Image 1 (spheres, rainbow, N blue to C red):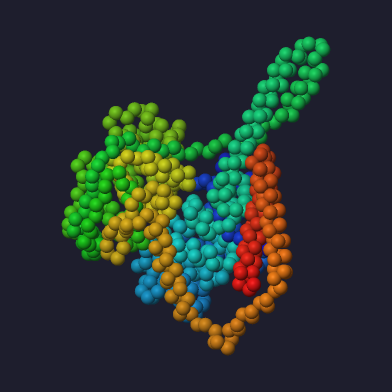
Image 2 (image 1 turned 120 degrees about the horizontal axis):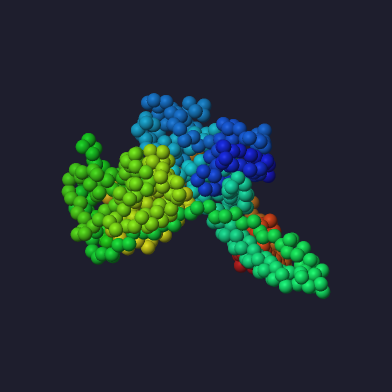
Length: 593
């Protein structure tokens, strides 16, 4: 296992903001690493340093001589009127047949491959860029938020690509579901330090929580011992008979040091608006046709959504999800048919066209005061602003200087101060970090009103949605199953397409394909002897795993806990391999004797 990239003693600052502080990390040639950290922690900066676009203040990035970097470009590298096929041939220098074969892995065929790239949606253009990456045959892929604005189908195609890709990958993403499906290792950047973890992101986050709990319990024990020593010293230092002992205890007290636990970074705490639950249909669509004067998107829409539902509007990019939402909130007039809301519905909208058109001259606090429901107190407004990370001087910021993520949080804050009993949310998870997305999902689960939303975040959608509305092939229909079932259906469609593609590839002539030789029959006694040996090995591994797990739960030292965790993971792998061998031997016994 060769080291493709090594980061040593890396330091990088912008003014007072320290992004890297003697950071260390190594990326090997056969691992896929999920790179996580809070917004603004410095993940994208580190990628630019790896690419050679920025320099470290001090430290080194050591690259293996055979390193071939592949970077998923965020800008568009296409020429005017260029087709996808022409771009792939120009970018890679590969022949037409090779470019077409690789593009087929991302379902780029027909007009998508031979038509102008400019007419493709952002998701389809990302597929073209991924095809270009593959044609260059890199041995280390750098992907910076690759799932942003990708529809479910493209996300799954990207997952399949990464799962089958044999080279190393470094993937920056806030999407836990995507990282969990593609990356076996985790790299965390927090407060300038890089932490490498030999496991998936969920296991790392669980390890972090457990380690913090261990350190907090250890500190409680140390504080209790401190209090005991302080009381003893106070009672005995003035007495001649015990003064020497008191001095000894004072030295013990000096040696007692608390574990350093970094203070929690600000985390959003979101509470949904308090509304009275209602019964019956909240939304009815009858004979609805949606689209634009020059283009119809979907027709013959008959749909009903009940009060209290949380309806996820799903479908590929470009199918019309946002058009549907804009039509039902009357920011886009229907071409035909009707949209009817139930009696007493108060509708709040969160969408890109809302948070990009905020009043530039207002401050954060001024906007929230103007949007808050009648009777909201100043303290409550400040609490909601603080929950969405607008604290102290930040509430006085003018909207004109807010980032996209800050504007998105400001719109969410205004909805939380409202009394809307229907929320229309178009991609609410965009621009939000993992913790804020989790807090929003929890709030929507508690909300007593109706939610109609779109999201490319599968974890968020799975957690929030109670029903599914699919926009596909000029239709808008209620999907009968749960979100997991919908994801499974899309996965099956993609796999069917991949099998069809594989069946069209040339195969070796029959003479070249050699039959696999049959393994000779073994003596039954030898097979049963090996079974007994494997059973003993399984028992030993199982006992060792239980012992190490118990030690891990009791450990209060971070380095020791990480070592124990790694040993437990290694034993779990060995145990699984031994159990698989035992099953194979049992099948051999049943099949031969």
